[in-house]
Image (cartoon, rainbow, N blue to C red; front, side, top):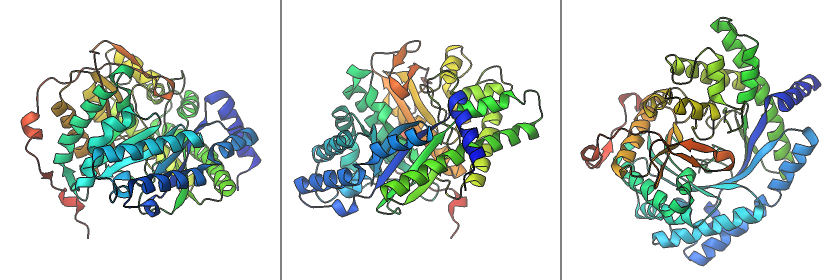
Length: 454
């Protein structure tokens, strides 16, 4: 039971500390929409999404009004389209028609993003999966709300380096295809290793094949709440610091659990998971970087940053697991540069580099996220960065991701405006030494020895 004391505490966190529920995400299986006829496939997809999601946005607004908890986004995730479109889609152009159908369904249901224009190619690629991947630049250039992801590796299978090479090229092509809009298409494209089936956060969300026909997943957030709590324990030892983060994460997760239960009951759709990731926004005071600096760092990027982030991530998970038996998704701390004003400030003052961010991804929830890089960065270099992140995920048995934005026409020192929750970002320096010969080898990096647990 959720008590009146918890409700009062939650109200204080909302009013003073920027607590919000970042997203209610309705996961929808499209496997029963498969058809060999492309028109029938698109019709089936549109009809199922709009039928199940017709009340999603209005229900979210009702819960906001009744409980006073801001719900920033209402979103949809679907079965990876490479699987759904396999029978009907014979070319990249066929897949683009599906992307446009998804975009129309997202617009007509009122959600801000729809994820699942995706392929899972961690061990190999079918011709259909390759066709979807090659369609991504055109799909993201011709849609507004569709998000795309590709899983190119896992701890169990290793890293598909053919897919890594291809994705470096696709990121570049997407940047070119959307260059009139600051290469914004790349902000809706993420490359993953060990992608979870139940992630409610974009752009990596898709509805895994192991999930039910429809499910409600909720993503909470609360960097401002954590920072506010830590202000009260300045100078205290690490035991006190850890306990404060853990207790606060517990309270944040309980708010998410309440919203998830209400949304599930009102929509008549089973409740899946609460993802308690600390997801920052460009708003002042709603920053993961601010938490790390409150711990005692002069700036994010200073020595000690990785240790501080590891502590934060672990205590957030511990507090969340005590609050709910349904914690899932990614759950921890995101470090997207463009969406976190503290990260942006650290980059601008020269304290935070791409290399330091990569080190931080070893202990955070995801990876190199929403990072603007020079528009002339070679595809092979992008592939090399993807491979590095995938290796971190594969070896450490964790999810890692890359969402790089090579902004065409921009160089180091420029700032790029993306708008809304996507924020703005300084263009960061990328190592200029090449790795093309390494990437061009092709094939697969085998799974690590500790993956063999059968």
